[in-house]
Length: 462
RNA sequence: UCCCCAGUAGCUCAGUCGGCAGAGCAAGUGGCUGUUAACCACUGGGUCCGCGGUUCAAGUCCGUGCUGGGGAGCCA
Image (cartoon, rainbow, N blue to C red; front, side, top):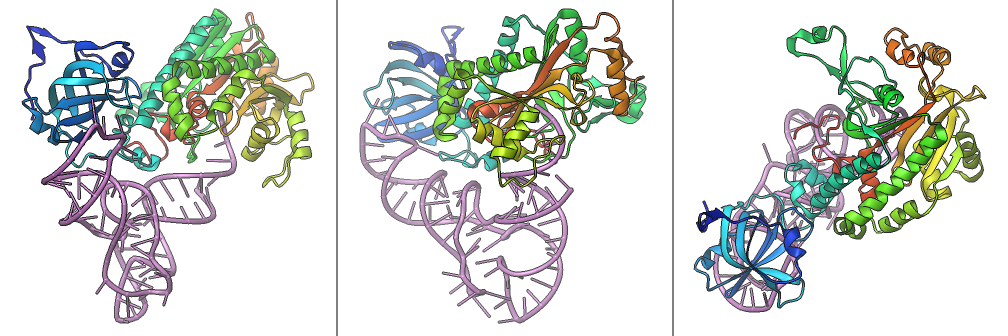
């Protein structure tokens, strides 16, 4: 029940809501403005009550001052942390330390008082606890900042590729491909009809790449940015069953072009967050990862290392020791090997390329040595693999042989093979895990904390 | 899926050798203060994760299940 029924409507006209972000951008006092938001904390005394109101528009909260002379003053003590309020008053210079301006209230209306059971308290909570209340955690400073950054970075992705002349491609979420060489698939059925709906098994997409290739071979440069699904029973801090992936694909491009794009795009995105999310990012540099600012600065200011898989194996054999698993040419590098390269040997992003063909998918272009393919992985400190891509095999006969070797049916990929028949060209692309980018730029170590409502094995409550 | 660790008040955690269930913070009440995650005092608050076992006696030991975390594999 509202504490104070001061009307939202004044002189027959609804007063416009202003955000905290807008208010804090003012350089001078301003009369009669209105804020709506949620109470972070309240301090009540005999003469004054202070209410911190946050509306999610920015990290900062606004200090509302309520004077005891106001007729509804005695009700202020009932306002609790979490309550939703509408405050109308004057933005005035603050006489005390801590803030330049504050809102001197004329009226305070409570939409709803949050009872004592409100789980978020005026104290630090663990990430594990906040995951269990995923519907409320965006009301904390950390997760508010996190998801404003996520939003800003999504726009930055579109901004970058648009600027570079790429067309955005909406690739299918539902797919009939029974294997794309990228992990376990979620099956899709239509109620009781089972597989009858499409006439063949259907799945949720694990990658938009094969579709993106078709459009790169028509529009020249395309990118996808959408949800991706992996049913792998994978329980680590870097994996989710549903995540977002950015996949650029370029015609008339080789592996070097792909590596150039990978490096340039990452530098752009990191610069973007440093420039456009300064305040939110500062929370992470102060409280989440003290080294974050330095890590980001190195990414944008230094060239990435680029070495072949073979050179990486040699380096690891020479410089590395005490690995749990041995380093063997022809086998995939283990996590500890990739991290050693990015964190110890180079201390910055490193691109490995030209991998043994037997550990990579059929669509990667066979090199002239016939032992390796034109693949690349971009490894970054702490996260490991951020991007993975390749130049694609554009020669129909070789592509068909590679499919046979990996027991894939030419029949079900006939359209993919046909793209190499009429006007085939060299082309290349890669995929970037959007959540891993967010982990990189915020220093957050668990992927569950950069996704609004994360899906992992056994977890789909929210 | 495998290995390791954890589960005790709303939250974070202590609990010794198996012997009466604890602290800080939060909350409630009162006081005080141009306050800054305010401060001071008092009060309330427990299925010790579930099930089974050992024992005179289990938060504590054993078995098992569930949940969470870290790592591995797989990958983005």
